[in-house]
Image (cartoon, rainbow, N blue to C red; front, side, top):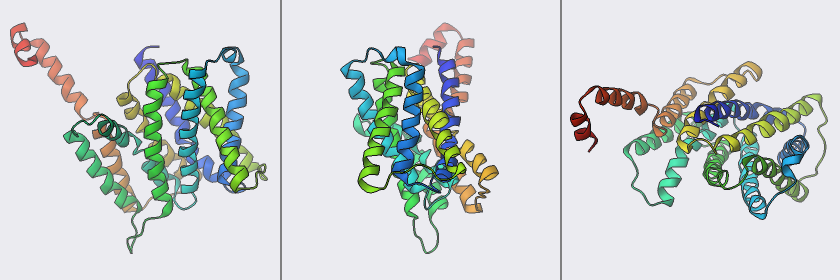
Amino acid sequence: MKPIRADLVMLLATMCLGSSYLFIKMGLGSIEEFNLNALRFGIAFLVTAVLFHRRLHSIDKKTILYAALQGFLLFAVVSLIAFGLKSTTTSNASFLVSLTVVFVPLISTILFRKKLERKLLISIGLAITGIGFLTIEFPFEFAIGDLLCIAAAMSFAIHILVVGFTSKQVDPLKLGILQLGFAGLFSFLFSLLFESPTLPSTPQSWIAILALGLVCSAMGFILQTIAQKYTTPARIGIIFSFEPVFAAILGYFFAQEIMSTSGYIGASLVMLSIIISTGVMNSPIQAVKRKLFRSESPKFTDHHAA
């Protein structure tokens, strides 16, 4: 798969993931958090396993271990989001979780002990300021849901870094399907421990569960796993930054969620931090430089390249 096709696949996955906030909010009307995730990932796993059963005939131990790790991280991400949405809006949640693309390079820098780049420091500062506008209310109290969504962003950043490695080691389709199964299994076990598992009791909840299972989970996370094999984490981050835009649009039209003035300022700052951290603002400048250098003599070009 060519990088441009991988980007288009990731864009589709981002649209699927962006719609999940609204459906999670709908689904939580009649069932609890772990129960909801057990159902969504259970449906996603069963449907994809049936559709691609021939690819699942031969699975090695490495794929199972990688899928279990990814499944646990995915379980952590969606659980934090589900609990977070109980006390924050879908728009707030989506913008806060989109901080994933700031955390990805930050965590990479810490792990590999590299010096923080200036643009990353700027993006972190803007992100923190944006979070303040989005979440802090007088008398300066954070909603627990906002904090949980920030934790979900950090967990998702780790998930993306892990997938970036594992998807290049084994079959990404098998990996994507099995991680859904493990995420559903972890969710079911936690539901047994802390909840009373049940089926949705309203048509609205069933619609939400089916949408979460078939669109957001089966399509979204499998497409992400496949796309990451053929593109870079930086490009994934750029595309993933559009997720809160899709979520905010759906929240406006289907949940009548209207952000306050401070919310719009915060959301804009978060988006700006994401753009800077992924280098989108630098790409036009780099393109101009490359064009100018090509137009010069080889001697001049070599001198600047050195």
